[in-house]
Image (cartoon, rainbow, N blue to C red; front, side):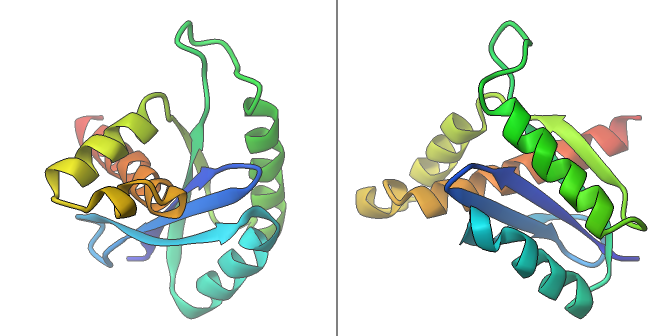
Length: 139
């Protein structure tokens, strides 16, 4: 059984999270610059078996595409081309940044650490991944 990788894609930074090998828990992994994301993922996939990739899809509150949606769709297509044997799934990422902030506050992170956007991106990716894992168990 391979890991599941989750991505919180942004035009500046990409938050990455991963499951354990049993696909039970989502853990923040890293934050990389968006231009380095593909190379990072290629290296990771060579090192670890990855069963699926989940990418957060940005939407407006109304459910319509946001300004960032086109960037995520473009990156998703690149992932599908570069990793043709790994399925790429999307999941609604509305409120993940707010949920990440709340989780970090509840976890006792210092204010300085909570303001670090890289940390927020990693935790957001973990929330995206946890949402995906929960949706798999419901279906």
